[in-house]
Image (tube, rainbow, N blue to C red; front, top):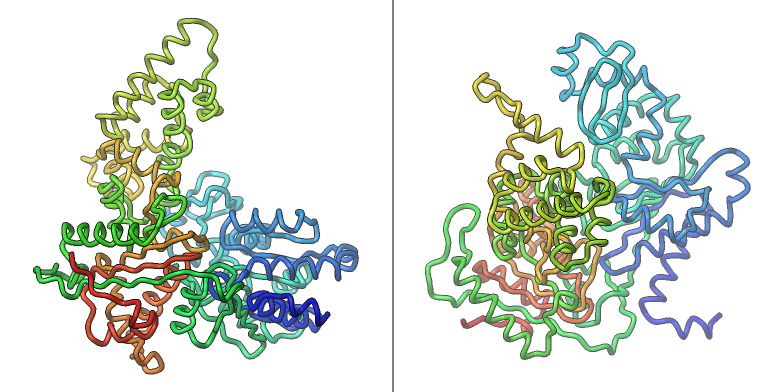
Length: 581
């Protein structure tokens, strides 16, 4: 064994040490938390823990009709874990919403009672008098009531589960069904849900064993719990980095000395370059969101100058090799050709994650079909349309398709989203999904003269219809990965050969100059600044930890002397230079 250990890389040694501690906790039925920094191989540790449990409890738990729960943050993560555990029937792996619904869906009477206590439902229920014996359902995540059923929102599922956790019988059922519960990306899990777990289960006799896997420095979503602290948890730090070379990991370690990481190959070459624009002599932007940042034209020139310098250093700027990480989608949108779309939606997720039904249809069906038609790949076009293809039985049918697609291509180039939708709804080639058509119909039927306020969903659709459709084309190309640009939120969990991070202003929730200033004495950050500091620090850490080999950062925001000192400390003064452009 000693001979094998000598052959392990520093990262592998750190990984095996953490895994041994996880195995020890699982054997002792001790709840634990694995703190795995960026690139540490968290999912590997989680999957190895699941395989350990399968080997140990395969027959025991099956006989007792019990399973091991693995709660994930996304369906993508769920699919990956399912694949890496061969979809073993002992493992129930699903998102937190699906997991919670599987627990509470059978408690219909209690759900009806608790629904009366939720703020979003007070007026809706008052309109129908009472819920009676209506069935509570959770399918699409939209709130609605009809004569027979009630459809609840994603957030309602969590709120109702938290409420039911106050019930001792419910807790016993949960513990009996899932004696072991592992939670992936714990830091992004709903804070109130985690508080309920801490209050009702951790350290309590007869409770499930919990294993939390994640990194509180990578909490970048608003309602996540972040750091979890509880005396019943054994904290296991995974001090490995399988992603980045030493030049980058050394910076991450100076940024985060309490969780030092070891690399696979200490001799592997890489680079870190930091550019600031403090010596730029022009007038900077003002206003709470933009104060201290370069004007747009100057920021573009600074970016172009840095890109030229990086090319001279040997960077390959192709999208597959290099990502440019921007602060927000509102900044990115102008670069990518869809400046109006972020102003349409209340939530960026509506278009960046295709949560809006129109955007999902455009990105997943209509644009692939149009691209295939333009390339004369008609079979591919019909496959993209899927179930929306009417039967083609004659030459006349082919002509109608050709005429419909030619007109669509014309409107795609010069029309608005509304023009495109009106055409599609008229010719039905290709057909639009029922959900999209229903929403269009509701907008048409809404009476603006009735004095009622237009629902947000319809208001967003009205604004979307006015957007030039070419912006949708640009958005879809970005979503398909045909772009060197990304947002820092959009790349959590992924990696690239090279990364250029552009740090500036543009959103009142982020001020990185202030973050660097506060980091000088992070142990004494004022209470009213702590949340903002962590929000900025975490997003910056996520961005800086994406590259495998080369990291560059451009600060378009002016940095104070104190902030510059922190930058020099984290990234080494020798790597920091003032940009002349």
